[in-house]
Image (cartoon, rainbow, N blue to C red; front, side):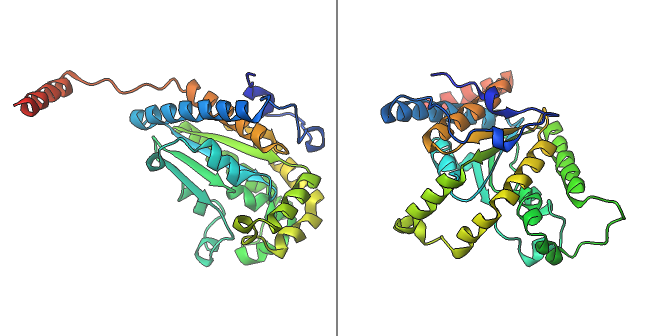
Length: 288
């Protein structure tokens, strides 16, 4: 079944509400076998597209993944990007900022990790944390030691503007940005957290904080909604990904990435006459 990425795109200047966005939709696959075949086909095509992206050297691709805990960010990155060349792909997970990072503006540490032209960069969480978790827990601002703001200034609106300005600047200079919000239901998150407790390769990274944050579910939904509506643009859109079905989410994500790369109409550089001449000289030397 063909997936239309535009269905999941959040259009600029719209009034989309999270409560109206499903976390589970009819799957695009009819069996696990078909899912594996569809994902394998997409990963192979993504590998080909990455090769051309790298060879052309004109564009970079930045993928941003944001979600509540257990929404499937790590799994989506692992499975969707399984076919790409690691040399042309850089994944960075943003944790709590270090002492050094806190001495800079909130965008600084992310800018340091941006992909080069020809590369695919993946942010597992990102600078958006500073308008999400920080908004839910404003006491974190004390550590940032910010200067006093003018009366009537809205900190979050200022940060939204900074984000839009940065992303517009990156787009103008060849970085294409896709932002994924993996939309998982509170009940599905509960099930996944419980499953992780009994899974050795996952429970080691669980902490009480993961469960405590569920108390702020409504506040997080409000923060995500405000953030997404304020920062989705025609050039740097957000996509709502129904994430209760992990397999379906991965297929949707891969289709969006492929569509974005294909729209760049990339091609391998054409060799010059001088280069062809050098290759012929090399052939002769190797044949001697």
